[in-house]
Image (cartoon, rainbow, N blue to C red):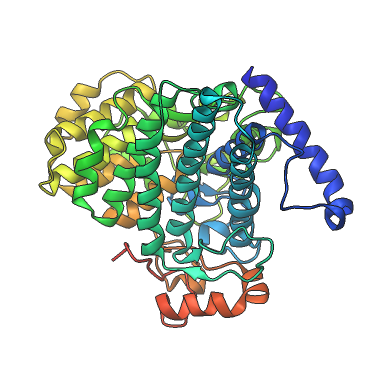
Length: 466
């Protein structure tokens, strides 16, 4: 059934893209009732999953910023140039216009329909709460990418110049909404069923997702009470939120970028390869191929790298059916290790949660020897967590990059010609879209003045990155 839904999503997307230029002037965009809310929700999930997965340098450069991968011939993005391809603009558009707008419209259609009976009313409520959870995940990403962003006035067709809301305010409001969704979901009722591409309509898993999201937001902003109140209901061993791709026309974007494109644009970066080599990490064969002379050899980050001279990205990651992870037990385990290391009460020691994270990562990559590896690389301090979380988050570029920003590990390599706006350092955020300077200049400038002393720069730090 999910394959049918994904195929239908693709057909709808093609139809809309082919006709929207001609119909925009005659379409009532405030009443999107032509498409069922369930389909809009599934489409938003697909868009969000694709954005997380992609390594298309027009859309997603986080695997580069995290120094998991580097480029071979065209090295602008590995040198922090996000202006040439207007990457920030396309990221902004993907989240707001393509994902969050569909989520808003889905909620409007679903809640605007008269329920048939009490069971249908419960189902509508559950769907509304699930939409809130996905929206919160997307908005958190936007804040963590840019800082202050449009929120309370966003997605309003009548307002083309929305104000930028304070990033910390957005976080706190998202936390309130996620808590309400977790408390409000009624597991005895129905959800999205097969239209739910992440959990197949499993409301218990959505509750876990919400609790996990609270842990993630809590650890990011240093809210001890939030983490302590949510961890017990978060993801447990084996739990994962992922988007599975059936292949064919609905293949993982990584397959499209790395295989179907016929290009050889990326190799693993020396940053992660050297780190894992130094630890004799047994996950290396699942992450990379061996180099032409044996062993694992990463390309020099930010420099031109002849594709044939280095290790390549492992075959599993390039498969058309490779599922992209949005959040999982591995990630939550490292957050809890960090919380425990701070002395917070999260049901175990830092060493225990740290071991859980590594073991879960080994299981995901189908690699034996986790216990021996943990014994050889035990928990010592935050650097242990930072290094091992970074390794475990491989492929999930934005999560790895954010982990580096928060913890400062591992040490990153400075490329030879970093963009001037990065101030000669690893970036801390995206600058705002160029289009915003033209279309919403006053509000954008107010946000820049408030956060970054008037200079919209890659080195500017958002509120939690202190």
